[in-house]
View 1 (cartoon, one colour):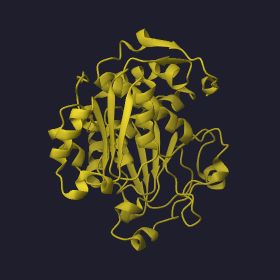
View 2 (cartoon, helix red, strand yellow; view 1 turned 180 degrees about the vertical axis):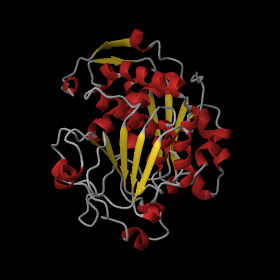
View 3 (cartoon, one colour; view 1 turned 45 degrees about the horizontal axis):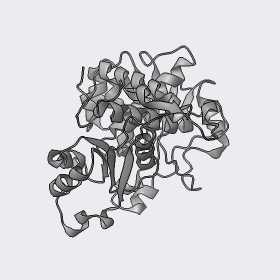
Length: 338
């Protein structure tokens, strides 16, 4: 199995099935702390350097929250313009300096491969929070963890499931990383629905097919799709050459209550990596699904904290010590009912 202690988490390629399932079981152990039934100080005194050089809300705050819930402290840098990178400093030099101030670093950067480059200069473990259109390994892990949990409610498993992905599959790093993780599982059926110009890259389709999975690519939603999971994505406008080019595709593949009822099974789970684009011209996942019991997007976001807590505990080698440092929560909280 993958050695976690002291390791960088840069790519889903690092994870075989045993490693994935180990992360998931450690994430399960984090539930009492995330839901405020208990608190732990296992990382008391440890410092996370949370470096986000590209806009982010959920991922950045989720990493910080996960570290705080383990008892650690968080130091944040947001935006390229507020860092020494804006003055021409190299990623290597930034890594050498900032890693001396931290025990572990999480990083997001708009350039593919940048987090790996940064990790070469770091003296502490680095976790990839997204590097351009390349990878988003922690999102892929939390997505797969959510899929496992949601399928369990219906007596299903990841092996043998049917997953439908819709939208911008060319630039969406979340769907790229999730697809790669699925290569560790068996007999998965995948339906990719997108404009031809935004289709899933051929190399990822080839990886899936070589893993023994069935892949179907279509450019429209028609007929009945017997998917167990539908994973909707937004148009990644920040990856396009211009806003005008992105606008050509915005709103092309919407999912609302009427479309869901017409095309999907009554128990098909709805996922989205967030943020969803709720502007009228996009609205790829309609608010009329907000109260639908199969809408898993907020459970999905909650699971991000569990997965990131697990990765911090594993990478810093304290996964077996978490409960030894726990105490009761003494403040009012109804998160235990989540």
